[in-house]
Length: 358
Image (cartoon, rainbow, N blue to C red; front, side, top):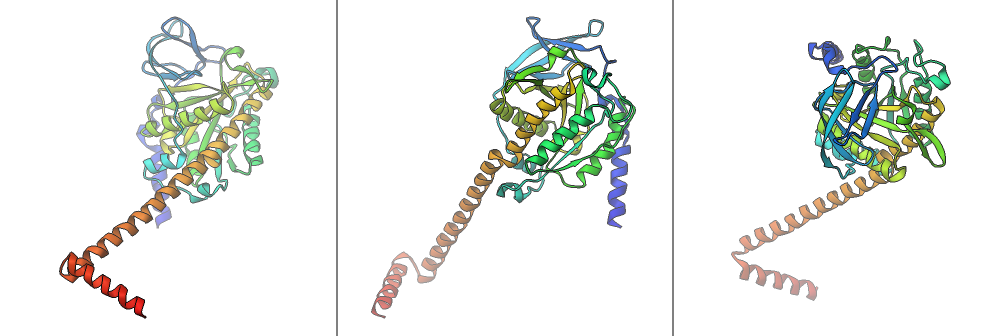
């Protein structure tokens, strides 16, 4: 009976009129067209095939946060204002789960590797220089990038649940279709889930030289129409902060766009853009392989270990606090039973003397 109720709830969640509305999935331009986001001085901040709306925000590679204040639809140009300079803070994933009242898997605190889930909402996305086209109906080049990401995580001892389920065609309804896949993956209790895409932009928008090799940057997309936005924001900025330390420039930035992207289903859900259609697929694979190290570092490396030590310290302090409280309470009860502090002291002194005589 319980299983039937759970299935019914999941069906209702997927079919809900709120989520059936394509408005929350965002909108994409035909391949070869893209929006340009500029700062108040006209400097290019972002070029993307994703449609940009008013109030969208963008955190740059240099951690400057901009908000879109004007969109010229004809020129596909978004103008912004500077909101603030952000100092990214690393929030341990266990802390983020607790913030939403979710349980924390203790294995991570002990240094054990857990499970990461990966899927593709837009399966057809491909890379022109390598695949010969920007779109392959079926498993496009993006699937090979997803496999490279999964293999790199597995090499680090992480269990990976990689779904290659198709959600064709590549349209706004694809997110509704991939929602079922997300629910299936979440039933396996992964620590995090990644929807791997590629952007549509000029080659130079994503190309970067790191570790003496040319590769593509990885771009984060977070949906603004999402009740988990606060936690998703902390999560994305935590991963960027670690990437900035390990491989400066690897993470291109974080786009906070109008949309949902199924991130309401999990607080630790993130959409990744692995390069653009104008980049080569091997370049995208190199970039996402480095990002796998960032994921490992955050979930199972130094960050997780530090969080585990902190929680252990809190536990120890809690135990000591309980013991201290118990001792004080026992003392108070003893004094009251003895009829006051002086009689209690005399009784305690006499007890000690008897023990010495014995």
